[in-house]
Amino acid sequence: MFAIKSASAVAVALFFALFASAMPAAALDRVNVGFVYFSPVFDTGWTFEHDKGRKKMEALLGDKVQARIVENVAYGPDSLQVIRQLAADGSHLIFTTSFGFMDQTLEAAELFPDVKFMHLDGYKRRDNMGTYSLRYYEPSYLAGIVAGAMTESDTIGYVSSFPLPAVLRIINGFALGAQSVRPDVKVKVIEVNSWFDPGREREATDALIAQGADVVAHVTDSSAPTLAAEKAGKHVVGFHSNRASFGPSSQLTAVIPIFGEFYAEMAQSVLDGSWIAQAHWRSMAQGSLGLAPIGSMVPADVQDLVAQRTEALLSGELHPFAGPIRDQAGELRVPEGEVMADDALYLIDWYVQGVEGKLPE
Image (cartoon, rainbow, N blue to C red; front, side):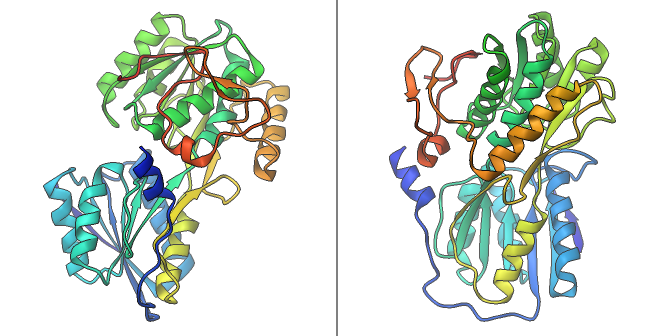
């Protein structure tokens, strides 16, 4: 592995349509795989989990794969330059691991039609560019059960990054899980307009605690919410990594992505010539998501309930977005007996009832 450091309806159709290459790809003896990271590889967090996935891919495929990473890549022209360089240097498959790289990945894919590209959380594709996303709302629902069972104030705080559909799915799934065990719980949201800003994340956590939250969750990438909750003697649900070392008495659990097997599958498909460009929306049942160990402060009956709900979710018996579900204004969005469809879920632009947060018009 080589490491380099450097600085609507149409969307639904684009996301869920499947594209196949016009020409069958030849099998390879070894596949060169590039990874583009928006931040450095810390010891926890989003990029750390992707790099764990890269290492797992290498362990599974051995000398059949050669990986190269570029970390701390800025959005915009810098990312296009990095992606193009990886393609020009002989990469057969390139993973761009942030939504902010979507347009640059598409442009590079147009310039290098023989290279395969996989973009995370996007909806634009072409015959040599696929997409992949994770159903974060599944483990978030389970984490919400824990948070709902542990709050005594009926107020849970949520530090949000951006009002994107991917983030709204996570917060809504969490709220629905909490409400399943504590119907009157409120989830207060503060946006920090950043994926990684420890200062603002800590300020938001402190503000939520001041507003009565005794449990805080986050969909941001630093350990600041965990550290703030630990200092304040409150509980926290981590995100992207197990952050129990930062909050040994505060972390209830954490929502964690798992990329290794998927990265190995994609690399193997390029190796054997079977890769096609399509939309992958990975689930817990596919081994792409999970929860960190639940803290010992959580009662055994709550842990048992999470285990039961996990089994139901994995079997398909349980869906977090099964109706009836109402939005903040009380409008029925998912009737009883129905499950929210994937296309609606992918572009969700509203909060469920019980979530207190203002979204852009």
